[in-house]
Length: 128
Image 1 (tube, rainbow, N blue to C red):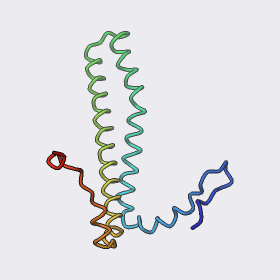
Image 2 (image 1 turned 30 degrees about the vertical axis):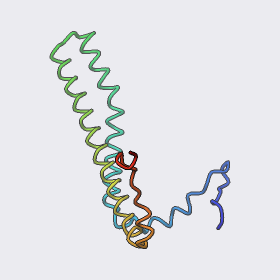
Image 3 (image 1 turned 90 degrees about the horizontal axis):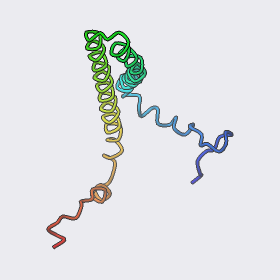
């Protein structure tokens, strides 16, 4: 067996062997595209946070406008909610895709190897 393919850039492994995985992910490209969009929206929401915080501080200290302060605080809460929802959807889709794409590999295992794969933690009753 050969070692990892090393590229010319300071000894980093080449990503070329990963190209063999792309056909396995083809049935899940819709899930992966939605997860990528969720990643972009969550990252954008994270970048909007300092901007909204600036408006929050301006409303509180410079304008002394309680209505604007409440409005900006609710907007900040909305940004957090959008970011949390997008992170949840992204993690859910990527986990479901990883599990679904792994199923064909797991079903090809022999009964002996799958039985040895499941390990149970020692119970308290056996310790006594």
